[in-house]
Length: 177
Length: 177
Image (cartoon, rainbow over the protein chains, first blue to last red):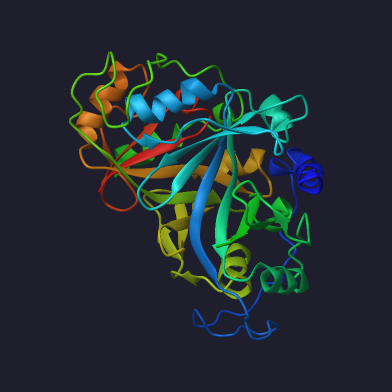
């Protein structure tokens, strides 16, 4: 867990706003599902959108918006001191929003909230069936992983964050489902 | 359609990054599904997450990332000149990512991409079953709608965008399913 905390604190916040052209090669268009040129046989699959993470300056207010005003089912507030966040999950039927609020002095989302005072979307999390193979192929396609070795994420499952500069400015978390 | 274009061009981009504390009242905690204090009987329901919209500087490159490198099923590029965007949908099983790229000289996402050169998450879209009642209640709860009168969105359905300053810095689109 300590390693994960160290890692997640290094997640870029400025790079979500500034960046360069994605570095992966432009592949030729293929039929979806076919093995594209330059990519060896796929040993992993992308799955569902697990959640959209939203960093919020006031957790009770944000929870009230979705629970009381919009009528969504929400979880209790869960402190995750080892990850430096409080979380509340908003159920949307097919997926969920994950409200994040800083916990402790060096929360990984502190910098993000300093730059985005009202809050904002921090990352999206997509499930994969084999995270080791996913990272291997993504790295070979020049999509950088912020932590090439999967870490145990907030949900107790192996996760890898992909560099926003290589993913259209979006911090993408992959989670082994 | 012209009205929608006019409206969507007025969507805030700077306000996604700068903002104030959400203005809706902090309601008392209630059992999920119960009618909270200060909110009259609910005449609408929140539904699924319809999509996460990502503005991208290079549509072919972004499409290749999800299609060729990640193996996702993607749609063809669809130009929507009346909305000032090209779109590509990335299927994730339970929901989809909507890649947006400017079309025409005055695209509604032009300003966003100027501020976010690498791209970034532009908005999330959540379905509702009755958008008129949704707007009525949200407005009475001091959640501002950018277009109080529903407009016909990119998918041919009535949509309303909620002010990011009232939604934790997130531009939220409601779409009548």
